[in-house]
Amino acid sequence: MKKIKPLAFYLPQYHPVPENDEWWGKGFTEWTNVGKAKPLFEGHDQPIYPADLGYYDLRVPEVREQQAQMARDYGVHGFIYYHYWFGHNKQLLERVANDVLKSGKPDFPFCFCWANETWSGIWHGLSEKILVKQEYPNEEDLIAHFEYLLPFFRDERYIKVDHKPVLIIYDSNHLNDGDPFYISKFRELAKKNGFDDLYVMASNKLRDDIDFQSMGYDAKISNAFQKAWAPYVQHKDYISAYTYYKNRVKGLVGIKKKEQKKVRIQDANMVVRDIKFEEHTIPNFPCVLPNWDNTPRSGYNGIILGNNSPELFEKQVEKAMSYLEDKKDYPERFLIVKSWNEWAEGNILEPDRKYGFAYLNALKKILNKHP
Image: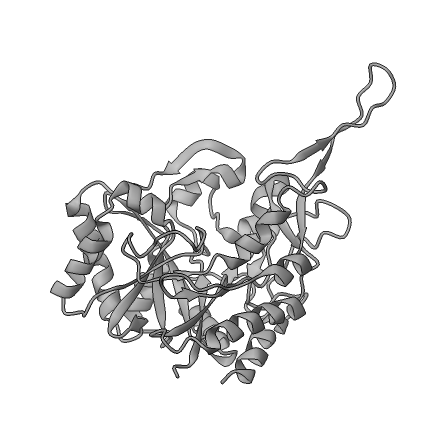
């Protein structure tokens, strides 16, 4: 039976680019949001601080080497780099992947998740402002997109399934609506360039019971975590997503006291308890989340996974491993971790000052139980 291979999503948003300078101010990176975060209520664990790797700049090769070595030491098989191609040859944050390809370092497996969505200012209070629109303009642009990816696909480090490069699509519906033949055209180009095919996976964004096979996908990243989370959205103590609840306190006649804002918090114990990984028409790879708190980006519009801990993450990983153990028919047994370094979402495997290596140790512990 094939070995279980953890793959961790990897955010390249840790170096300045002209677009972010223009939109958010000179020198903006994801660290800008992380560093300015404030606790929104008593006991709120913000801001969070990186530990061993510090506030790194991903243009520095030594940082990328340190990340890869750390991931390898704790059982992570490879990184899933977010890839941003918006159409019309427009890319963002491609510097890291380009440097990794050109230098040949780190010697660590990787693949891409095409984050095919429009960038807006919604997480920063500018919901009406479109920063970069995701489009699928024509076949010429599609070919240019493939030709950009081709050197990566040919790299020995690029993750493949049966000699087919893995490509994850973040928003399957968006791509299908924009160009329903995009995947089939990509497959044709892959075959023309010497590959058996592509191995195309849908991300965890959408629910699992959609007919992804008819849409051209070989596999899916499980949406089980979000499905377990969803029932608590309407809980009376919480608010609906991306809005904040205003608690108006009545005072003396004609006088209004200051409104008290509340951020949405959900109990990690309940979510982890209810996670159930299920089989569907195509391989469904389990996805686990170490933690979640995106208030550094979104303030009171954010969502917090409360009462979280490395021990709860260990339970998630155990569930995922148990699910994968009997998947003898899967061409590979991937365990997806979201994420390695999405710091402004509090969604990290990298060590922070509070927990250190506890989440990485939890992953390694369960991996060692399921060789």
